[in-house]
Image (cartoon, rainbow, N blue to C red):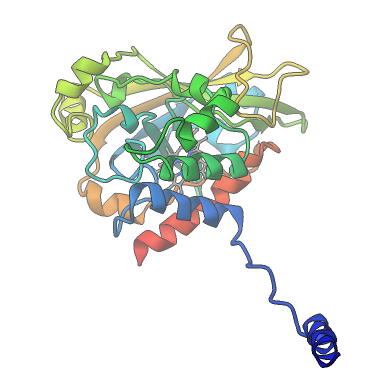
Length: 326
Ligand code: HEM
């Protein structure tokens, strides 16, 4: 009887004791940067992703056609100076440039506009993205972190890839270029060009080089560890790297909010202008530390779509930036 009374008292006490609050998760962009740190380790002073890179300078000259799709000052002319950072994927600052996981390579551009404002574009060599949401990107990274070489099969990452067929399909679209100048880069996320009448045109950016030259994996593995990053100066000494900035136009029904779904190849592409990369920045290592590119750093005449990746990226990049400045 005594024991029963004690049990009832204990049950009452448990019922009225304050419950421990469920552990608070940080916002998804921070979870992603944490997951990148888990996969690649923390490398003081370097980006959580695309850690190895090189900064270059040049100009962007808009086409006459661009101004009929967007009222942005970027497309009104004249030419503007640009800062461009080319990079290898992963958070590993000493990864050999020819390593398979240095793909996709990145191209981030800062257009310096009259009046002192900037607008950015952040592209890579994947033709479309492996996953559609920040949550899935986090889970892909966590699966990679849980799949060391000795992990039993199927590994967490193999299971993730099997459950998300867009991921292996996207990863199959990349190859090592023979130079950062001979690669095509894709914006992947959709943006709107807004014309003078206020009409919005959904587009995805493509940065088209004069020629694409890809190496087969055996050839890429034989190249010097810094052949892309250090090789850019030699390549530019022979002449500028010229790219055409294209906008692929969506047609009604094309998916605007899912970066895993490429639009049909026959969709119209308009020429927005010519990007000319002329030289490597005088102190590339110092320049890249101070640079923060944001897919959502936009100006009047260019708007972000509701593709959820854009907001997640705009959240994650400043977190990585703040950590690498520490
Ligand atoms: C949820 C999706 C994504 C997340 C969370 C993410 C996250 C990040 C982070 C944290 C960085 C380091 C930023 C810094 O320290 O400045 C970074 C860099 C970069 N990302 Fe992403 N990324 C995503 C998708 C993409 C996509 C779709 C592209 C290209 C289409 C891309 C291209 C790049 C490039 C080129 C860089 C290097 C930028 C630079 O040179 O400063 N990322 N990303």
